[in-house]
Amino acid sequence: MQDTQQDNTSVLRGAFDRGAAARKATVGRVFRAVETVLMFEGGQRTARRNAWAAVCADRNRARARAEASDILARLNPTPGTGSH
Image (cartoon, rainbow, N blue to C red; front, side, top):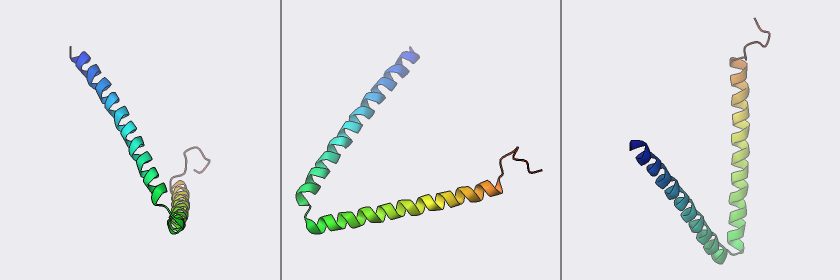
């Protein structure tokens, strides 16, 4: 009996999650439509500038992540690499 209730709960939870995802997609479409209507040349410049800033920030995070990974690799060498 309890297993059946857990199964029903997981089915309902999955259906709710799919519904939430559909609502998010719809809200996203509405925002894109409003953005398209309100977007003018100045807004496009701002959007491009914001996009470029995001690209630069992503590159900086990737560079920092790679640097941190290199440092950790040097501090914790993999066993069996020949250093005794």
